[in-house]
Image 1: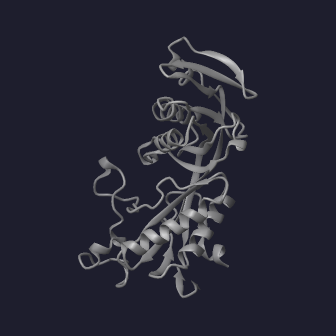
Image 2 (image 1 turned 45 degrees about the vertical axis):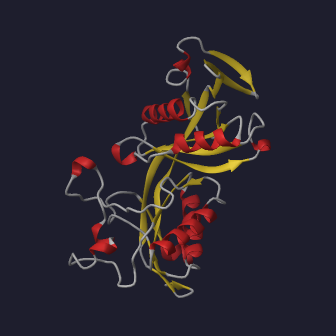
Image 3 (image 1 turned 90 degrees about the vertical axis):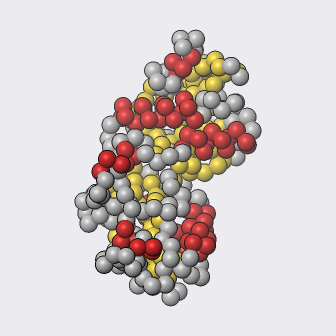
Amino acid sequence: MDIDGVEVEDTYCEAFEGLYSRLIITAIDSMNLQKASNEVTALPYTVFGESEGGIESYVSKDSTPDNREGAVIQLWTGNGDVEKLYTEVSKRIRQGVLVVPGTRVFNASNGNIKIDTMEKIGHCGDGYEWIVNRFGREMINIPIMMGDFLVEKEIRASKGIMGGNVWFFCDNIGTALDAGKKALEKIKGIEGVITPFDICAAGSKVETNYPEIGPTTNHVYCPTLRYKIDNSKVPEETESIPEIVINGVDKEAVEEAMKVAIFEASKVDGVSKITSGNFGGRLGDYKIFLKDLVD
């Protein structure tokens, strides 16, 4: 298959089920909103049994409960353990949002899994916290040294799809960054998806020589190893292979994000091939075939 002369490999990405919370963060100004939304979603750690997140979109004042500018974020864990998700969400909110001046957190999901935030977030008030009804919602008011931090008392969680991905074979790193940026910009227009790594420079693999440190480099796709190993899969003209990883509220959202990323990257000069990473069916229950997306 090809799109405008760019090969699209006849393969599939291997996605899997995860658990996520979808939240709205608001702040007193743009600087603090950006800081909080970046801090709370930073560092994808699901491979170490923790969590990952991403900013789905920034939204205007008329789209938030308190009529302040906001960000819609998603926080994920890679299993169905609700208590684990709550632990991960709570520590990210405590250390990534509460400490940023003038921020608030609201639920943004209709999921059927309910989480009471009092135990692991509300009690940051050290027992001085109280319940208030504001913005049409039940909120926990946590007194802190720069005013009060408000978090919705009940947030929701749902099952979704993690690990959708596309790879671009590029002639240099400049092309890779250009293709990655254009793909990300297009993905931002799709509701319900995040890209936890944005442009990822280091696609990993299941097997490793060093299991104590987690996933290691996917050596057969490393351009600088092309002439050092016998089984390299990097073509002569390829010097950089970025990966875009996608999580979404359902399989359809992930598929749409992969599709727009493929078509957007195919327009960039210097992209010769588009493919996807999988683990031979060993990791996930969902196979998303690229040919189905481009047909």
